[in-house]
Image (tube, rainbow, N blue to C red):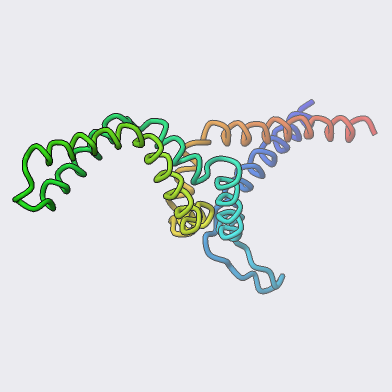
Length: 198
């Protein structure tokens, strides 16, 4: 019975340590370490594949999560169009008033102001939509969300990235470590039973 418990505890320690090491090897070592006898380089998975991971996340964000159209649609949807139209009227009227010669009678200036207001009231919504579509079209040509995300990730310090991931997933990673210990314990018992009864 003592042998069985010893093998179970050895298995638990091996299982737990294996998972702790596997989790550490996700990030460490940050820079490749040469192992001369094996002619092999040891480097953490995330530092080694950082460029691939950044590219993959960038493409996923751009294709699956958010696009330029989504951003502008949300912006236009949440925009207070009445305020925009009021601002447009004010600015156009101010420009018209400063550009008109002083000899134009005030009654005509007032008529022109009323005409401008009426035209903007009638065409304001369409103008906002047309401008939004033009901005979206220009933005699509000049902004690559996948590339932006990829660049941000590539410029992120690995130590900071490791800290963030470990903070977010610390509970789950601890469960993985403990699960390794439990599986190792059970394997140790099975091995002990095999040794005792063979």
